[in-house]
Image (cartoon, rainbow, N blue to C red; front, side, top):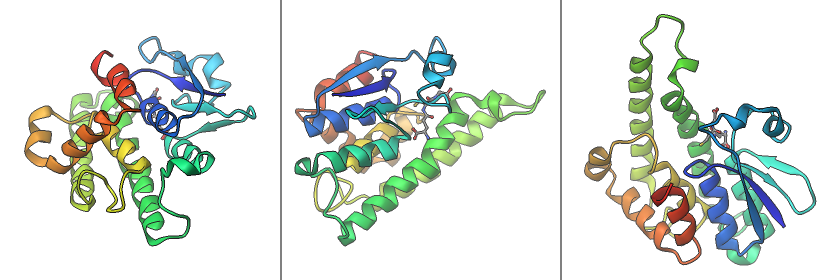
Amino acid sequence: MYTLYGDLGSGAFSAEAALAEAGAPYTFEMVSLERGEQKQPAFLAINPSGKMPALRLAEGQIVTESAAILMTIADHFPGARLLPPLASPARAQAYRWLAFMAGEVYPIVEIVDYPERFAPPGCDVEGVRRMARDRIRERVLILERMMAGETFLPGGFSILDIYAAMFSRWSLEPDWKLAHLPRLMALAQAVSNRPAIAPVWQRHFVRA
Ligand SMILES: N[C@@H](CCC(=O)N[C@@H](CS)C(=O)NCC(=O)O)C(=O)O
C-alpha cells in the first residue's frame, strides 16, 4: 500500500493520477496548504523541504519531488506503460521534458503563489508575482510547441501528460490559455477524461 501526502489541487494531483492510472493501492493523507500544515513538524519529518507531494512506498521509504515520484510509480508498474521503453529515444525525450517541467516551470509556481518569499522588504510583491507569471507563460509556450498533440509524446499516453495537464491548471489566466495553449488545453481535457484519472481530476480541480 502506498501513502500519498498532499492537498487537493496541489502537486499531489500528479502523483495520485499516476497511482490511479497504474492501478496501485494507495491512501491519501491530507496535508492542508491553507492551514500551513506543510510547514508543521509532522510533515517536515516526512519532507524537510515542507513541500508536497510526498509518497510513502509499500516498503516504508519516502519519495519526494513530484518528478521522482512519477518516475518511481512508472518503474513500479511497468505494465501500465507510463513511460516509453527503457533506453528508447522516446524515453530520453520523456526525461527531457519531465526535467524541464520540474526544473524550469514548477519552481516559478512558488514565486507566483508566495511572492513575498522572494521580495526584499519594501519591494513590489505584486510586481514579483507578475514577472513570475510572465516567466511561466514563456516556459509553458515552449511545452506547447514541443508536444505532439493530445499526448505529449507521439507514442501515446505517459506521465508527461499527467504532469503537463497539472501545470495547465495553475498560474495562468483562462483567456490567455484559450488563446495561446490549444494543444495543452486539449491534452488536459484528454487526461481529465481518462477513466482512471477522471475521479481524481474531479476531486482536485473541479470540487476543490
Ligand atoms: N520541487 C517540488 C515542488 C513541490 C511544491 O512546490 N509543492 C507545492 C504545492 S503544489 C507546495 O508544497 N507548496 C507549499 C510551500 O511552498 O509552502 C516537487 O516537484 O515536488
